[in-house]
Image 1 (cartoon, rainbow, N blue to C red):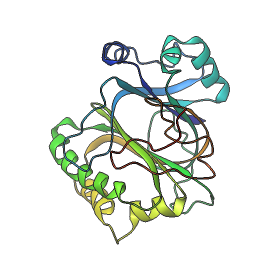
Image 2 (cartoon, rainbow, N blue to C red; image 1 turned 90 degrees about the vertical axis):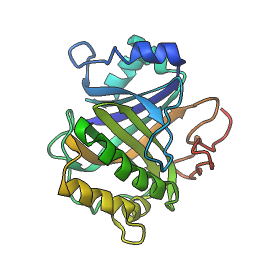
Image 3 (spheres, rainbow, N blue to C red; image 1 turned 180 degrees about the vertical axis):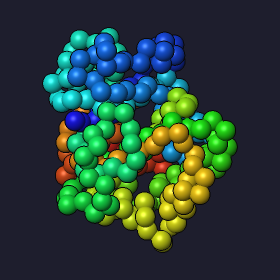
Image 4 (cartoon, rainbow, N blue to C red; image 1 turned 180 degrees about the horizontal axis):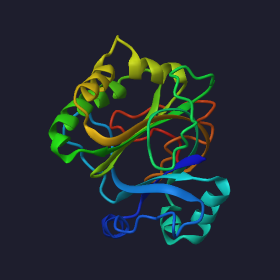
Length: 243
């Protein structure tokens, strides 16, 4: 099993049209599960500000051949072709999510060197929305200042809410996620344990093994990003090379 994140600037009208056409396993060979969403840069504020005209797809697949087929043959795959894509191999997971194998390791300690990616995926309890946004806003603010963060975005089409973040290494992301020096994310975990925000959720760490494409003419992660990291700009948009 692999996961992908596709992001593309397709315009407001096409975004609204595609949001109602989520691909499903019964009509997309090799797809295990998918969610379409609006995207928003991390801001460290309670209310997210979606990026107008940008759509995101988070999906679980059987293998690379299924992704290749989707991109070559599916109308949504063609619509996303002008954006950015990253392919992800799961390293460990906490929680459950459709399409995620039950045998993915659960230990926080992962034997992995090099850049890492994290997806947080959830189906929000709508009655917990305000409480969730207040708590997640603090965690996002801490993430923006965390050493080792390469790039991150939020994705949402409630009840689906998610983040995708890319890190220089597992030490950096683990320090942010569980360290006591900046407790916003550990505090968010504790608050969720106290009274759950979600019907279902998963925190999944990945080895990113392929990435390509651009957003607004800028590559979120340069061609060499898995060897030499790029940094976020102050505005939360990628600071990579022109592509």
